[in-house]
Amino acid sequence: MTETFEIVNEQGEFLGYATRRECHGNPSLIHQTVHVLVFDKNSNLWMQKRSPEKDIQPGKWDTSVGGHMAVGETPVESALREMKEEIGLDLNTDELKFCYTYLMRNEIESELVRTYYCVIDNNVKINFNREEITEGMFWDRRDIESALGRNIFTPNFEEEWMRFKQTKILF
Image (cartoon, rainbow, N blue to C red; front, side, top):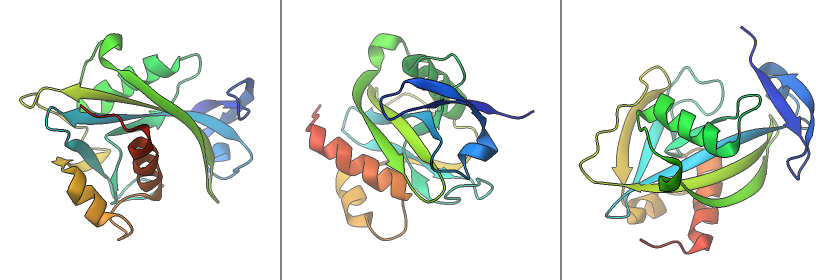
């Protein structure tokens, strides 16, 4: 089955539709994604190691949850769906906090990213999708900082982390 995305402008206004393949080969087609940063009560960030089968950034550590918005889905609906599909967390809308929106461009694609975060109890079990994720663990903020720029993380995550730090969100 061919996956279809909504194409938008930089403000998120709907322009049309394109296939996943078209979007991942044409940076002029902006499609929508969501990211969720999942922290524990100690401010450690749960990160996923991408499967070596992924078409973009295989085998690198990445944002807790990230995915494309389905046609007709709101960003919050997408974030909640992706959390359940990727890491088995079934949260309520009020447990998800909006951070920011930004445009991520590279030579392969352009995404309008909406980022959220949540804080979960330290005893919550994360059951990640083993087809998409090979490993997952909580990272201390200091360990993230020391690994930046060393080809451990996806470039998208490194950009995401810099943006998140600028929010000065503390818990």
